Image (cartoon, rainbow, N blue to C red; front, side):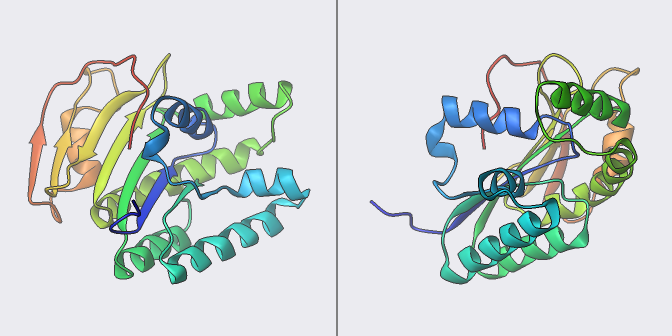
Length: 216
């Protein structure tokens, strides 16, 4: 049976946050959560031996084509530019239901170190200064993206496993999960980061670390 509506699943977050690892876990544990069409500039670069800019342009072309055709797809993005916000708005205007999974850390230096380790294992590199600057630009766009999408889950992946710090429910309610006083994600900080406008309601709840992989 075909889908009744087009889905866009967006896995976003700063370089080195663990997006690709979490995507692999979702595919392994809940393959039905993600559409069969998966558009990732890094994978395009690897498959066709393209430079980063050419791969990014090809990924953008594929995403725009999918939206014009009303085809469900998943994408991975750092989301450090307004172009990705514009893409979310275009998909929303085209009638897509948008699921948004955002993965971040509490400190961009965590991301820098993870990318270094990735390179040692043969993975692709990103200059440290770009990681740091993109981190802040990405975080600055999180609130707007969350307001646009239909369902969102935001994870702190600083430690051994992802911790849910916020989610937007299908009803439009934003639920915040404050962490300890020494965490970046206090209740006050989360309210300031997301704002209180654009949601039907904002709630604060407690959360526990889960060993289950994130789902969309």
